[in-house]
Image (cartoon, rainbow, N blue to C red; front, side, top):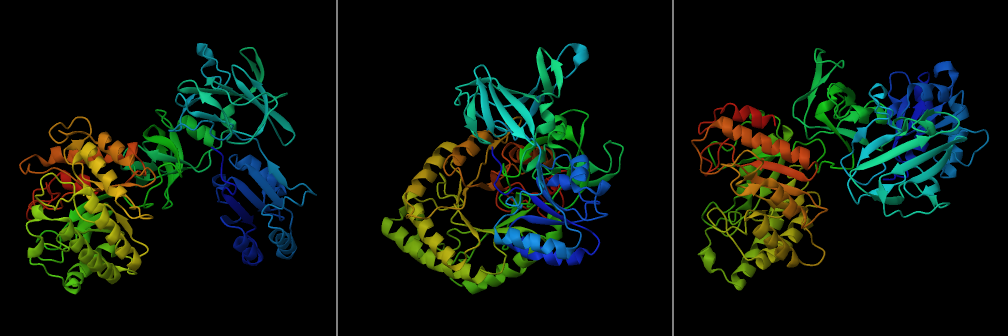
Length: 632
């Protein structure tokens, strides 16, 4: 797909008198967004940036030429904008002119030439994932000559122009001619159907040329008078060398993947990364794609925290920053349910390891209909503050225990009427507005969850209600919370009646919402579901069925698994539970990156209702479950 109009941009200043140069640059970086200021090219990897503006001052660049230096050392840089300025005073009027003309790269100043492009091909199919299937001219000694490369696609996916140009052929293949820096490049696209362009037509970067006929898209490039003769074709060059994918990233397929100082299993370890993290390749994109997924290959990578080194490329898959971006970047979606009213429900935050989320039921009623929200705040606040200071994100789920429990006028729940539901939700919304005001502005609550399992078929641990009533409740409570807190997410109750009944319930609930109100996410509780190989814990079916069903309801919103786990099996082996839990987590992270905001286990300790605890009834570890879950 076409890259953004403003792609990653670095502005490189000389090291000598750096702060004087920086003072001159400040108005420019105020005017133009997304400019990374780099102090000297020495020791900085400019391959991270598509476009580089370089001050061509003496004694700054190799051979005193910014263009020569960048083209030789940083092959991933696409555009080089050279500014000849020997002093900060000489740079100032150039930048002032660009600011005045709203001209980031000084394109209006064509003389002398200072903007230098290279030919690149952005990814040429809308299909995902990103993968390079075959290499150019591979294994010539085995007679497997190839005039180009093959990309992974899928039948019917859009095949898009990797570079702008003019269509020269539109038959068995589409051929587009591009002219860059005085050279001609002919890109051929093979394996097509439904061609949508004609000979002589000008095409833009990212414009659809045709549809993919199968799962392989063939790409070849001719660059006359350069290149080689192969398979009866002249001037062929390796398309890999021109691949450029905006915001290319690599995602680990396993947790605790080691990053090493050198590309060897014997090299020292500089850090570990997890399947929910995105790594930035530190190599040319085409060569990186040849390595990703290839046994025995090592890829140089960098993570958000600054860890840099080599990762086993066979444990990586290619993606982009925009594809599968985390709902909460850098936060592990794994979490656990806690309970401030349970003797084992508030472990010291240091016990909670590498998980990212903690979920609490917000209990005001205390089983007697209490409405003392100040007492509830005092009960939760100290512990929540300690957990937040330790880096954990907090979800509060509301329910009848927030308002309604212990009120005789609503008992028994099975005999509720529309009038009673209306009265309950009005009072509940009023209380939630006041509770949200107590917590707003503290940076403690990441999400409020409205009610719990309203679609429940049993009502053992929840209060079921008709979907229309729940929709009306959600709308009123949403407005009350939002009026008090503009930052926290507001999500649905966790639906627990399965992908068929639960998704139907969710759709009917959404239909009952007031105009203009939409949840920040759909939550569900997939008890009895998992991945292959766990029939005793996945007796209702595969987790895919739930993800697909609930994803279809609000495709643009994330899914929140606010409870999953094993119920009513306290004597099962911790090793069995550990395998079930960690394989579920790994599967969801790798198959649905960025789709699942949270994966919260029920519950922390054995004896917290009927959930299988991560620790036992007295808070001791349950090897290997405790260690594996807290590092998952």
